[in-house]
Length: 166
Image (cartoon, rainbow, N blue to C red; front, side, top):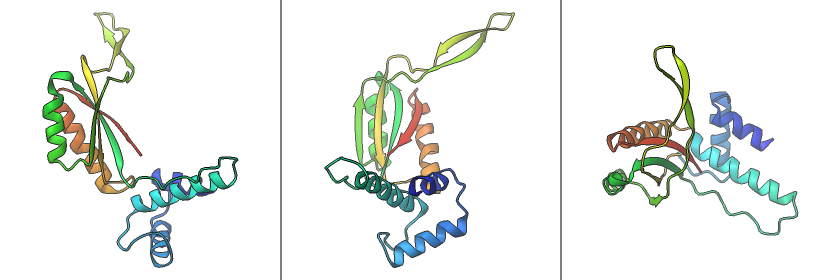
């Protein structure tokens, strides 16, 4: 039930009054600090769901709390990695990792005069995967603003924004 509630929160389907009530109650009598957002509620619900899963399983190790930050992934050409990392540091990234490229997928594009479709890779040529952590949490507006900022940053360095996760 906690996972379903959290899913509705992340999906934007949880009524605003219910979200605000949960935040207020969990701030007044629970684990959320004053001024918490829907993103902090998401992190708290995720932690609770992990602990409930642990309590009903044979796993012996108690799960650690979810880090209250989001990891964003960019695919950047190798020659632009250093400049991109500098820009991420200047933007306040808490943790930055440069890793090998990851395959992101394919898209169908028309080719030739008859409009026949052909598969094309969406990967950045000679790309590297840059992962950077920031404090914004979904579904907060600041999370969406960070995605827009990092999408633009990736484009400025000849790459593309790949996504975000916990």
